[in-house]
Image (cartoon, rainbow, N blue to C red):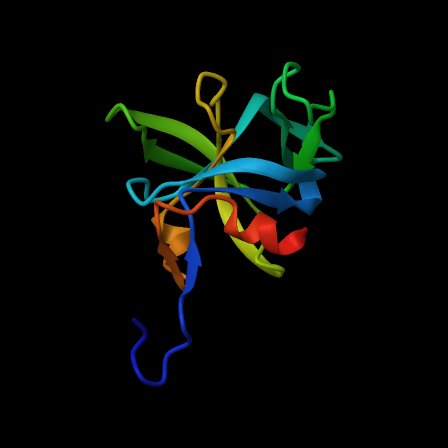
Length: 150
């Protein structure tokens, strides 16, 4: 329920297909996870390099076995270095980027920590920090945003 004067909340399911246009990823399977604080994206070959005198984060997304994989590096000059508690309760050092995400036809800027999720079912995880922007999770639903795109 929404309170008077507040925008109604959008209902999202436990799984959806998300677009990350800056990373050329479309209809990427995402787990909607209220148990996770932050959002995470599967990445590898993650390293900080110097490019034209500027520290730059370089990484690849997805795995060669993923149907959307392209063997391409992405470069971000704006990034952060964070400590994140993993789902196993272990504190990890991760780099994070801000990028745009398309959901329900709307563009959102959000932060993703980059981590190896190759053993996870979903390469993208959306956590509470993003969901608190006005989403309610109904675990009975899947692909609510994706169905609107069709």
